[in-house]
Amino acid sequence: MASEYHRGEMDISEQVATFNLFNGMTKWGSLALACLLSMLVLWFCTPAGFAGGFATAAVVLVLGVLLLREKPEAAH
Image (cartoon, rainbow, N blue to C red; front, side):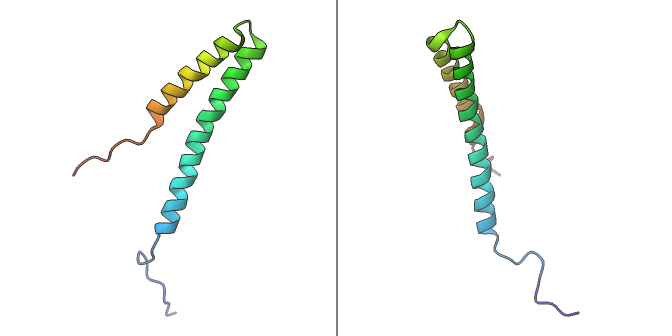
């Protein structure tokens, strides 16, 4: 059967952009949820109160941003 399809010739820039957007939203959304949950749990379920919950959420946020940010591409 003859076909018009040729493997590797399709423009996949939209698929790559969608994949990168989904990964970014998942990564940063997970960090936001981790900060929010840690703050709320420490605020309402422990004697740490608001200050302890906020401080912990701030530390988690800073560490998350440092660890999850985009790394520069290696030069070839």
